[in-house]
Length: 229
Length: 244
Image (cartoon, rainbow over all chains, first blue to last red; front, side, top):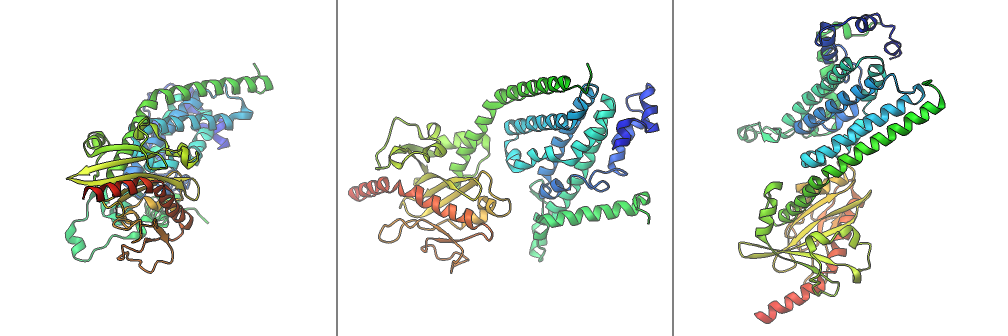
């Protein structure tokens, strides 16, 4: 975290001094890196609490993803814009205020335009404020980087977080209730032959197990993630 | 100005708070009408769902106007207070703070294919916060047609399960009054001898494990609310007998 803030990372020093196209290779990495090598959930193990709580249904996971992308992109941009103005001593408070206001905005908009979903997500929208990923990216990235890169970093990390949410929710809704997005997928004939929905899928521990399986698959594909020693 | 000076820090904080407050207040005000409209239609949806009409929010208003034929606000003695509109002017959360003689009790009467249903809003306390809902009675003013429960902040997975269909279905066809016309209410019971709920005359439904206090809240709110409608029900029953 500190490394990025001080800007002594040679990569970032190099980037900030050159003018480059909007989607240069390194900027694209801001979007793609969190998807695999630096995934917030499966590699950094951040934001797991919400990954357990709102992945029973695909729809809630998708709305949560969109909300987190909006909150993270917006707060990363705002903090990045203010990064030369924010007094160092209250920077965490400032970040918190920025995130909290964005979350309240999202909550208000959902209540007006997607009332059912907002009821379903109820407190979890409010809990985006405490999602470690959001604060983590503000502190580690937005405070030390330009607006466009911060925006990409916010979108990239939120999308990577959401990707795992959606993956987990897909498995849980399909095997837990036989539906996807509320529509029945498993045909009636399966049930007649004795197939049963797995009620365990609907409980939070199963989300943890699925996240574990995803980590397993990811590490067996991507060997450099495996810790040595 | 020095970014680490006290004055700058205070100024920054003050300006930030002002800006944030303005933005949030503006958003809240501009979205308020839409949000209130959602809450209003959800209320219609809830009332309709107790009598078995499941609808999406957009269609709720038309169906509500179609099926809900009469709505009254009653006084504690069973008389009708025609100066108050039950749907828009009564907030149960506020009414509950008054003494029963000061309260207005909303009642909706639905007419579906020539059967009348009486729908009563209920509200009480769960474990953490308010629980509320609607209960609809068949024409005998005794048998439950359907219920809807909702809550402000019960524990997810435990108390919050009162909103689930399997819990609500347990109330269907249960009786509120015993054979001597005494109000028994519906007890959410942990010691129910009839867990599969075959006996519809025992004034009991099976409780949810881990949600004792929420369940007690459900029992209490049903009995507490219904008792204020008894005078009106009695006058209605007398009228029916007179007509026959």
